[in-house]
Image (cartoon, rainbow, N blue to C red; front, side, top):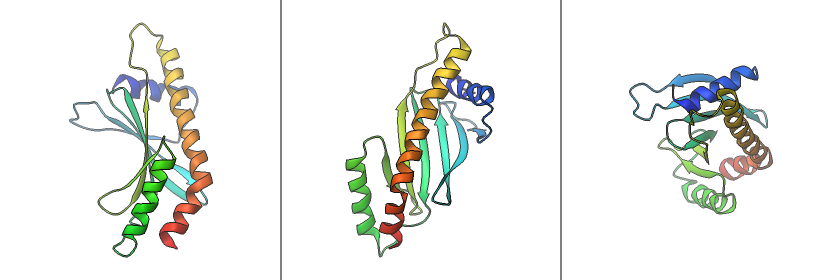
Length: 153
């Protein structure tokens, strides 16, 4: 497990947070580890991933609406997503190959430093990720209905 993933795993354990399932990506040069969970918004459970590898970045990915882009609504929803991307800088919305609406949040995390106390590093990294997850949750609580209305009518 890469250093950031190990530090986040330690943070989760120290704070008795059991909301994540952990999966190491096999044969991955970046040592990618995926922490899977859900965010509940307006009665919907949105699949959420925290992706940590050896790069200086962490990625939080939320699946907002599965298979919602169709031939009929494609132009409207692409315009809507583009407007959101221009308005909300920390989040990038996009559609995957199946037409599902995803939201990525990329943040820079401190790199591993052997001189740093492991518990202090875990706390710093965990607090950073937890803070950004709170930003994501607040954004979704304020905007999810807009997505539903725009895409489903």
